[in-house]
Image (cartoon, rainbow, N blue to C red; front, side):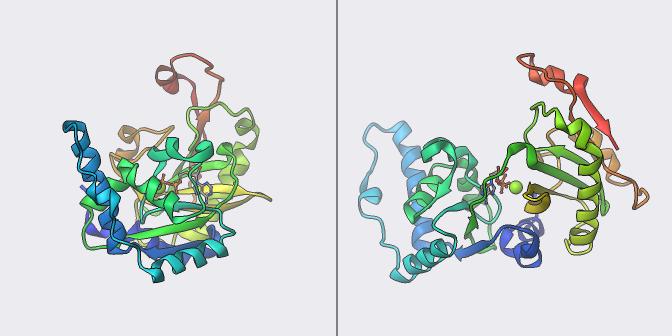
Amino acid sequence: MLEITDFRDFSISNWYDKFKHISMETIMIELPDELLKRIQADIILADDSEEESEPELQNQDSPEPLSAEFVQTFKNAMNRLNNSAFVKNNWHAPIDAKMFSFGNNLKVSNIEDVILYFTSSGVIQDDFSNIKGIPFCIALRKWISLHPAAEFRCIVINNVLRGITPRDWPTYYAHFKEEGPRIIEQLMSFYIENIKITFPRENYIFDVVFQYPDRPIVVDFGPLNSKTNLYAFSWKEIQPLMGKDVPEDLPPVFRYLETDIGIMMKADALNKFAKCHS
Ligand SMILES: Nc1ncnc2c1ncn2[C@@H]1O[C@H](COP(=O)(O)OP(=O)(O)O)[C@@H](O)[C@H]1O
Ligand SMILES: [Mg+2]
């Protein structure tokens, strides 16, 4: 069960300031009540409409107008980001609403896009219904074009970087074999120089993407628990490491798919073909 401290520490509104020099530019705007209501009304409406043949459309027809001040703040933020942004709430992106976006990429250029993604995302809805005590925000992040092979999740246990996994998993990338040692080295020093002492937790994950010319930047932080998607790793193998101290300079394991598993059953093949390098 996540605690309020988890929600606080992993909220972008909490970590961004400390890491903005190594992250993409982000502008956070507090989610106004009328917008939260509108998103939640749409949720209720959507639930209703499954059961009743005549859903109440009143909310949708006459939503409480957004304040001029908020609309202006939003526009200014979008201008600063060249009118092309990636949107999240404090914790999550509306990834599960991707199919509603033009080009399937969740790019945002106006407030209507944000409303559409937030109302059609179960992940965002869950956060807004379950999390209490932390002001919700719209985080607009400068849109960057990134290659899926350049995205990694890093697993930190007892303040030591223990594991690195591609986020695009299980996809075979031939260059990982040759570049593995360099990826390990770069992420290890990136972690030690920029994150280790600054992030206020001992066990967590952080996501990075390598940006031209080969500099890692932080995409996100998240809790490390049984619900965490560990991609190439499993919770079963990570959990026992949590109580154990290891030398600080122990290199992390970079686990990636060694063989192109093609159309084989990916789930079956994961264990067979995943290779560890450290
Ligand atoms: N600023 C951005 N521009 C373009 N794509 C992004 C940006 N930030 C994240 N993404 C893409 O969206 C994915 C999910 O983003 P992330 O912030 O990790 O969301 P979540 O925490 O919900 O998983 C990333 O893996 C990346 O591919
Ligand atoms: Mg995340």
